Image (tube, rainbow over all chains, first blue to last red; front, side, top):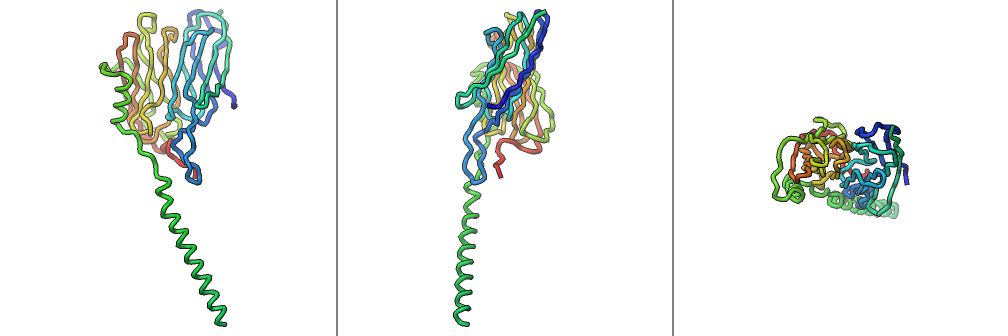
Length: 106
Length: 163
């Protein structure tokens, strides 16, 4: 599995609204294309993304084939305590790509 | 001498048959590579109905940011933000993005909570044609708000074949 990239601020003030950016590398094959001999290419997309902060789900997304290849996401959350932010990308075959980042409250 | 003439005639006949067959194959090909029908404004309306049900959808509160003119429909940056305090009492539950002319009317759905702090989400999407994109937000009091944007796409995405 190809790597994923996440961008979480390393330090934040308590109660600060932080931006989290993620980039997964995935072809997001739509299932609507055909290969050079005319056979349909089977659909293979990341259908769900989840983000948990210290075990609590703070953000979730459902993707459809209209999401671009190598899906990029940016969203916000409130930094309330030090800990880890975990990310999961789940594709059509149930494969899970995961990443995590730690954040420290000053 | 006669024999050579006959031979050339035979090869020419063979060549012509082969060529005719090849032509036949090409005549069939376009049928094989025919494209699937795209979603229509009606199917987008149906997909929106499936989400909001009978509830009224208000205009405002939601802001859908999309470039008005897109060169490459394969990766169109889109940002949806909602004006709301994001407190336990009032927050955005979910944000839906729909389109008119891709093969499927749904684009993506985002689920947020009061701990999001700010109701704003950005991603990149595919657009198969110049079309209208709609964003709908569901607030914690179960009211729906929407915004739409028209996009011109120069190079379409989604339906290109590998050739």
